[in-house]
Image (tube, rainbow, N blue to C red; front, side, top):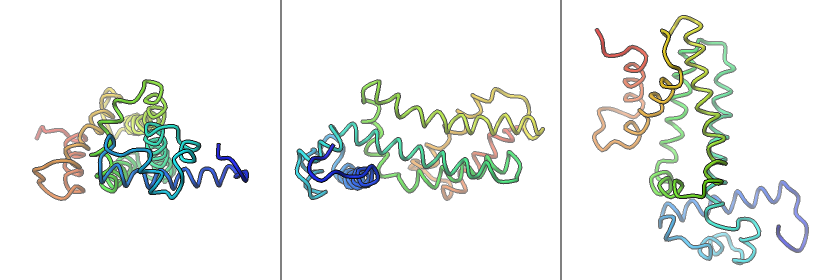
Length: 197
């Protein structure tokens, strides 16, 4: 960790957060591969060797950012789960919250997500821990809906995967049929009610 005056864990985390924010801006502007650790150090006003004290590589910055994104999503989803409403209402609220997050981070994910798939297996597993927790939360809402009688008996894992799979055409389509929020509602209607008349 950084040399000189000792920093508290809170100060270290604050600096890591600042570095990650600057790095994300560079990744979005230039691309992940085109951004160097030297450029990140310059953007944060620190020497390259000091930057390495906080993050040993660009891969570690990506892991840090994605872990924090998933932790934030999970925290917001858990707050929705605590509300005294039906599983259907919670599911819609979680999916709209997820949509708002994806729209807010759209540029970042367009430029970086392909690179994240090339990370070392250990790094991907660290990211997947939070991702799976969020997916399991949505799966749990499907199971809750079946217990409440709102949903018919289905494979909850497949239902969860179907719900998440429709987010890509909603957020990244080049042929929108409405606002992202409208398209999400239409997609939810298709998943929850099907095509049959």
